[in-house]
Each structure stands twice: as C-alpha cells, then as structure tokens.
Length: 168
Image (cartoon, rainbow, N blue to C red):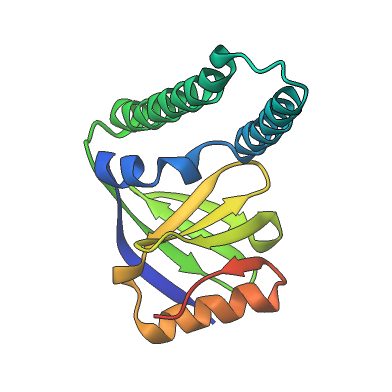
C-alpha cells in the first residue's frame, strides 16, 4: 500500500507556529522536570516561612529564556533551509510505504523506517512524526483526504507507534 501526501510546505510561518514541537524532546522534558522541582521547592519555602519575593520571578524568567531559545532554534532551521535550497519556502512530498516513509524534497529522497518513529502528534494544522533521533517529519492535514488520513492512522496503529491523530 502506498499513500502519497503532496505539496507540503516548509516556511517561516509553519515553523514559527509549531516551533515547540520542533525543539528537541529531551530539552522539553528537562525543562518540565525543572518546573516541577521549582514548584516543589517554592511550596517547601512557603511552608517553612522562608519565602522571598525574588523566588517568584525565577520561573517566569526561565520560561522567557526557553521561549527565546525555541524561537532562535526555529529561525536557525529556516536560515539553514535558505542556505541549502536558496529558497524561502520549499515543498516536499511524503510517500507512506509498507516499510517506511519516503520524503521527496527538491529531488532528494530521504527514507525513514517506521521503527525509528517515536510518536505522532496532531497539532491541529499539521500531523508531526517525531523520530527517536529528534528529527521531525510532518504533513499538512489539508493536503490529505479522509481515506489517506485513515490509512496513515492504520499504518501507525499496525506498527504500534504512539499515535495522537484526531478524527477529521
């Protein structure tokens, strides 16, 4: 079975809108753990009556710093794309085969096996496939028909890949 999703685009708007998913997952996990530790320490300080006002501003500053890093990472991704392809926007096709996904981009083929995909996330406008190596593949939901969408979901379920695809 072969499912082809054509005319997907990578440009600044798509990367900017979905930059949180493009950021490496290990760093996102580390940041979430840091937030939990911060909240726990803040509660301990409040209960021990050693609370200081400056402690409240640590978490917002950390969030701002992380957002700046994510924005910078997204901008770097697009600048690298401009350097390689000499274009603001590139188009690519995804071909879902029985053994993996073939990404066709500017006459270059990249093959990704299903066993390397860690999870599939529905962001609303995109379906993002996160690999174990931290790379991200995606396709725009508007480019897939309902039968293609259901076929892709079946492939992921058959391959036991964590799939968070919503119904169309």
